[in-house]
Image (cartoon, rainbow, N blue to C red; front, side, top):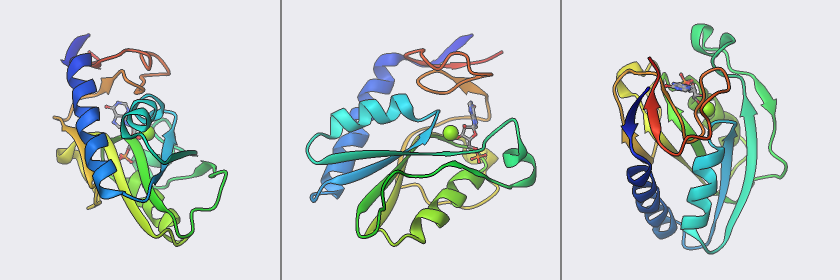
Length: 167
Ligand code: IMP
Ligand code: MG
């Protein structure tokens, strides 16, 4: 495996994103992490934002089932609390085709948050099938399959502190 983004570079970019998010959310922010891939990013981001941060999780089907081929996304685990009137930021590991995020934004927007924004550590713009808005992007990368910092390949490598390319 080859390192694509070193741990130190990930950490400093996460701090920059956290600064932006804090600036844009003076009344506090409700982070919605997308399981499982976003758990590491969310943990670092939440601590770097500081202040009034609350956290919830949601899980949807992803690679390995219908998500990539048919564009069908399935809700596996819903939020624990309502988001109506709240300032919500979806926290996702990576936006690839954009199908998963579009689905999440649609179902969360229907619950009438005051504000709904999205933070993704990684983006693969060349893979996009649907045009989805992401306010906070850590790094744009080429069309390569990556692991680490929460991202897996068959459930392995999530605990790596850096982003690596699987060969
Ligand atoms: P999308 O619906 O195609 O945008 O897929 C997004 C989901 O696919 C992400 O939340 C990841 O779970 C998964 N995914 C996409 N690319 C990668 C990758 O390079 N490594 C690991 N997971 C990925
Ligand atoms: Mg994911």
